[in-house]
Length: 103
Image 1 (tube, one colour):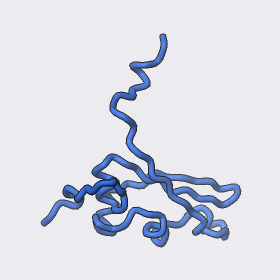
Image 2 (cartoon, helix red, strand yellow; image 1 turned 60 degrees about the horizontal axis):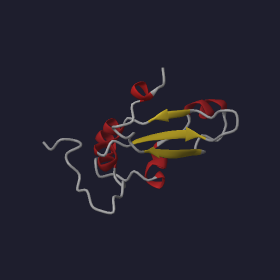
Image 3 (cartoon, helix red, strand yellow; image 1 turned 45 degrees about the vertical axis):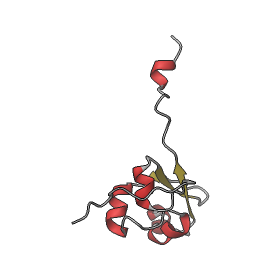
Image 4 (cartoon, one colour; image 1 turned 180 degrees about the horizontal axis):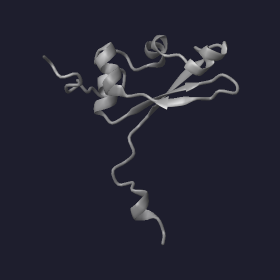
């Protein structure tokens, strides 16, 4: 059986368009509820999501939106699909706030 997140094919210019590319390149994806008064947000576990949807599943908002909703808004009877996604690049390796903080 092939590993869930085996080495993706990286092409240039770099396009983070699958869950495996996002995970292997160190990116993270967060989902946000945009309903007034809720504003919940969570970081998505990319390995678990790729296990569920497939490692070559798209990582764009249109690809992910059908699989997410806001449970708090659904329970309150508000629109539960008013969500957005943020893809976050990895922090540079040289950036370590502890080392560079003035004493």
